[in-house]
Amino acid sequence: MLERLGYDVSLYNCADHFLQNPVVPLPAVILLDIRMPGTTGIGLQSQLKSLAHNAPVIFVSGDSRPEEIITAMKQGAVDFLLKPFTAQVMMDAIQRAMHLSHEAVEIADKNTWITQRLQRLTPREMEICHWMVRGYSNQQIATIDGSASATIKLHRARVMQKMAADTLPHLIDMLIGLDIPAPRRQTPQV
View 1 (tube, rainbow, N blue to C red):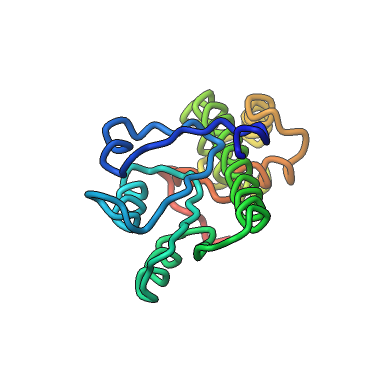
View 2 (cartoon, rainbow, N blue to C red):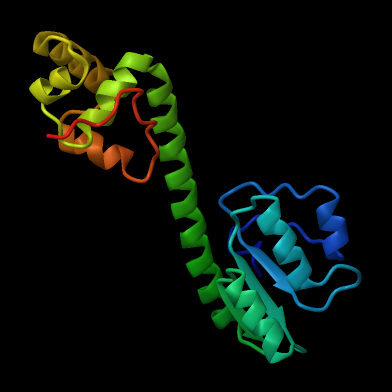
């Protein structure tokens, strides 16, 4: 059914077979049973986390205990489908999970692009960037390190160019959630 709907499907007899080559091209969704020979579904889900797999997991089970369901959900399962369930219920869960997977891929791609841009900055430009995104003016940054305001302005322009940012708010938005190393100099008491 999933292949007819255009999904690429890989089947594994058990979790241990999957773990022999746990490569999942993203975006993807993992449909996982609780009861399998060898490693359980919960055990595989836990190992996926340690392998840094970001594919959303949907559990399906005809025989599960409440504590297994709770553990699966605490470990980040998108859904837990109890058998019997309809094809529509499964498709709805897969579509929700696939949407999450697509979003995760987009965020990872964006973060990779931004990280590559940050690596283009010189150490000095990285310092200036640090102060810029914290709202410091050219004059305030110049006061921090004793440089001329015109020099800071030049570094600031290079940061904006290398980061492909049109405006300071665009740069700030781009760097939200990323850790920009603090400069060697202390923060001034302004």
